[in-house]
Image 1 (cartoon, protein in one colour):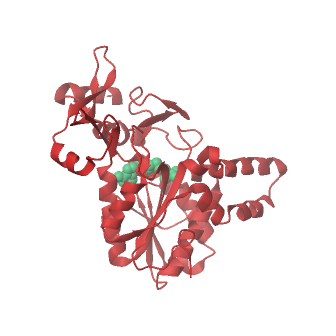
Image 2: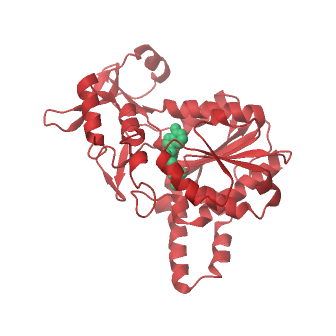
Image 3: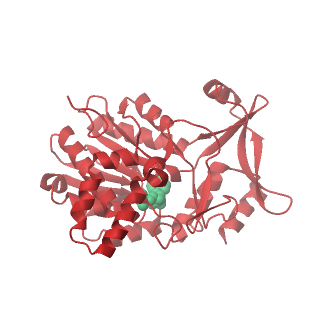
Amino acid sequence: MSPREKIFSEIYSKGPITVERYMDLCLYDKEVGYYSSSESIGKLGDFVTSPEISQVFGELLGLWLAETWASQSSRSKFNLVELGPGNGTLMADILRFTRKIKQFSELASVYLVETSKRLKLIQKNHLKKYSINWISSIRDLPALPTFVVANEFLDALPTRQFIRINDEWKERHIDVGPDGNLIFVNLSSSHQRELRFLYGHFPSNRILEICDQATSLITDLANQINLYGGVALLIDYGSYGGFGDTLQAVKNHSFIDPLKKPGTSDLTTHVNFEAIGDTATSKGLRTSKLISQRDFLIALGIMDRVRALERNMSEAEQKIHLSAVARLIDNKSMGQLFKVLAITNRNSNPLPVFEKHD
Ligand code: SAH
């Protein structure tokens, strides 16, 4: 069965499906979902992520994690965790770079949280030099301080979309239109009271996105960090607050209509970091300010690292290397679109880059 057939058959048998269910089927269905069956990430895939662009990204994240670990913990055993590791490139760069930081690399137990069987195999192959554990939920982590990194993970979580029209809250669904193509339809929501109470201030006729999976994931992370200490570093395409429809599809490195190629294109929404931060704070954690990927990488010394690597490169290699790094930090490229947020224990020491040391 093709992804398209599976979606049509669910709509014909049960009626229109929510945007959340549509994303879930398209991306994560065990048989036909995008992450189970397609070459998704990398130059040969549909989209390229920061670690796939340059090794410097993972190296600097490794440096930040090691610095934060050194400033926070009693230098005891800890969990080093990545959520949604894709091809495993980021963790490979983190582990290679931090090998020099002896205590950090010796005391780390590495955990990858991944749901896709296909990507797990790719990660296993990419990281075969290292001792790695795979788990499917943060709740399966051992009781130890936990240092987490997630790049372009939250934007891949299925999201619900609501809209208030003439004082009635509706949820956006997907149906089969009269011409046999998929279309969006707004159907009255059964959560009128709750939506009115929580989002009464929200403008009419604008889409409100709510990511319940992100909320439950941050809640699990908060429980772990509250109990055992640690930090989570979250990097994604998104903004602080905001509203509107941000559902987008990418195929072969170009944007396409999200309803056009179900199951064979990458579907994402922008991350609402305000909602993420609020969830973490409500569970007793401290949330950093939100900064751009550009500011984060520059503060960590990206230009020094670039110069160090250039020394061993030919002129042609230097050119490629520089343009890759420019993609990560240029304002018109990923530098401003991508944001970085850290969450940690309320009483932990100031976070490198985000918070001032006295
Ligand atoms: N971090 C990668 C790319 C992320 S793509 C990079 O920077 O290159 C999204 C990843 O999240 C995929 O590996 C996908 O299979 C995984 N994923 C999505 N939902 C998940 C969930 N609920 N739990 C664990 N992994 C998930």
